[in-house]
Length: 160
Image 1: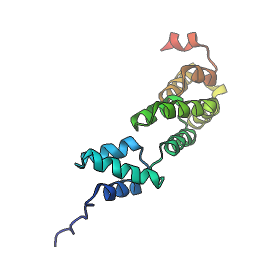
Image 2: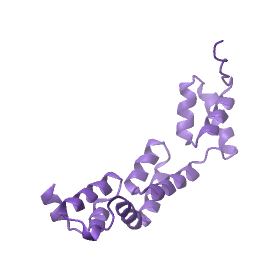
Image 3: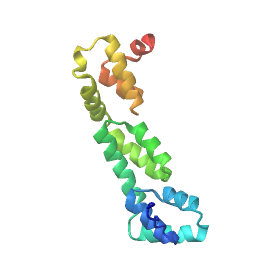
């Protein structure tokens, strides 16, 4: 016997509810996915208004969740900014998220570096450079990474 037929929601509303049941989406992501499924603009707008009215889609809550994820996983404000832009939230929410992540950036960077490299005070120059690159790649500002590895900018740039 073959596989059972997969149920496909028939309306944009059903599709929207199905999509947001699987993971948190921004309004822009939801609209994009509904458009890819072939729904017209009016049906997409109607479905989006429905899920927003039930607070199943909430860009502010999504932005807050991305900031919390950044703190939990040792990511910086630039990562938060890029993640929110990619998910299509408003520039105001992107800025707010980036600002929130910046408030705890030094502590988050220190914790991320300590988890990865141990005590930074005993590391040699090569390991400090590696820690610097690690922090920059995780979305921390250069100034924050330099502060954490305990170097001045000329020492890092001379060796890279």
